[in-house]
Figure: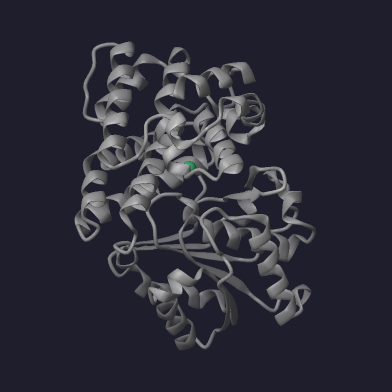
Length: 390
Ligand SMILES: [Fe+2]
């Protein structure tokens, strides 16, 4: 029986305290001479872009900076603004920019990927919604990450919000995999507590959803279980004290591992559903995930082998003797963790309107992540999960 698992990640992943210092050596063989830096004003203010600029100058690489990412969640308008900037400064068809460097969190990486896709493939970013819609490789992208959450720096997935439809598009294609990712701990302590909390719970959701996905493999399983252990071991500490560098470092590794899990095992209903909440209400992604995760796990449990549920239970630090006991303990542990780091545990408390649930559920059913959810349901099932989470 044919049963294959591709494993894709950037060819080079520089991780650790001071990891950015190795970037010049890795960049040199590519012989790139002009870069577009994609970032936001806050990252510039923190001085991170200046560090990247110095590296480029030392390598005699010329560059421009697009800092028009104005809020969390990459939107079509940000990608279009960047492409306008592109065209104003150069002839895009001549590929004047050889590569794109994104500096920031998942929003900036997703925007950079969106720009890189359209730069070589043409058309509009909406044309690439779904899986493998690109015909040509994107411009090379280098991701310099400053948060521990989205995993976008190591994935070939971009989440881009279509404001006119109020949905978050998922664009997935190996042809836009970043060539180099950098996770340097020196860029992480500036993350505020609320972002540390929500993005840490996003890491947890990537790991648990990926572990029970229909595309999970022993490779992603190992990454997922260890990432869950790291989140439960260190997220509270990173939240309480942003300068706890040991906790920050562990969360940085958990983020990379969770990102590799989501890219190779896929996710599931939690992300299908939270993408709708983010698209419709602009809710914080990680917080929505944390609220939904226990309810989706409860729904999925019937389709997940007992030994896998027991493994998750062990990883969250709550051993159990059977499937239902394990589900109860996992869900209790997730909700405890959320409460400890100031994340709500009910959708009603973040202003979700019950009248919208039918539309949200229909859109969630169509989200690409639903394809790998372990239990196949209908939009009515999804609506019931939303209701349970209210
Ligand atoms: Fe996520």
